[in-house]
Length: 309
Image (cartoon, rainbow, N blue to C red):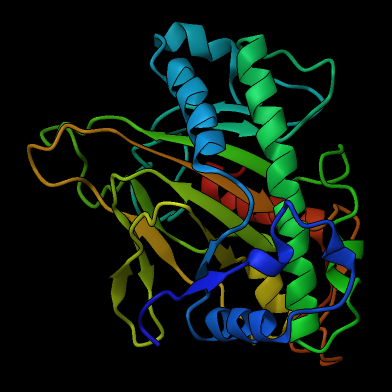
């Protein structure tokens, strides 16, 4: 399978109250197939509307278009209670450490504490509300995944019980890719270098601009275009370890726009992580990977992306 399938998530739509009852076998089979063969899937009919996504994108863009000095007080690393929360300036992050810094900015919503300072109340409210919607959808996807693998239905949910608290690193990232000046681009530089995500699953809400590519099992990069009304979901490295490599954490990247194209790009990505103290061991009882806590694994990967202190 060298294309990313589209799967109807209607049985677990956020408008449905019967999330805890029963299991849609066909949906589980389709998810398992996508995650074992590609590592990515488009979900339609999730209950998250395009209007919700656009509201968060608009509020985020208003922040990103401010002068550098206006964004600086909200920098990642300046929040004592959560070192991952806040603004990441362009070229700060290298998700592929062998390439120059990524040509993107981000705002990480990693904390929902009441004492965290925000650029505006509107920005805070839109981020916090969307975080909760993504949390609920992620938990539904994780439960279907557990069913599809023949595991105890709560196995993944138990390890994600603290999403939104200081004991869990789950993060909503508003991503902004500014116009690219091709004359200033460093050799090998991309908008986002080749990488696989670190946690359990990621929800991606793309704009129409394109540029995202996924490495297929045959070794070729395939485009992952924006499909209106869908959420793109992919497997993270910890989930691949958890399932002893049954589910794939596929490498992906965001290319530079064509020369002379001065357009911007925006996306939203919700990175669902296990709780910091959750112990991740192979579900099949093997010792293919040693046990690791969610927090320790994530810190090691952040060291790779941002540089070791």
